[in-house]
Length: 93
Image (tube, rainbow, N blue to C red; front, side, top):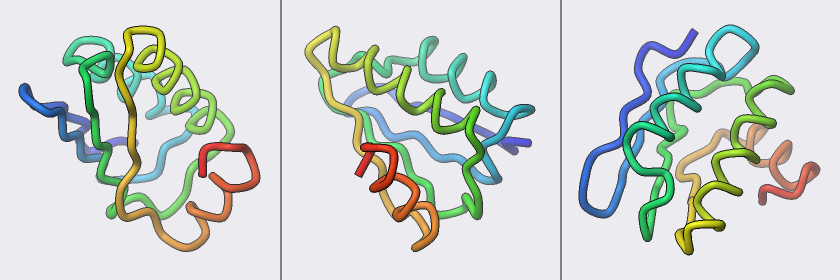
């Protein structure tokens, strides 16, 4: 479960501190929608994320689409090696 997913105003910075899976993905999407994933630049800090499940990948794809449709950008920072590899495979790299 996501311990917290917060996005701060200004250039957005979000931090996720747990795995992103079926249980936690909706919380991440809600936080992104509520706090500006569509802002000009959003950085999602994944340093505390050991694993991303298929629901998490889907949520990140949706969040990325929201940002792009509003003319913004979503960046992912500090993913683990396995999470970074997963992102490469699914086209989030």
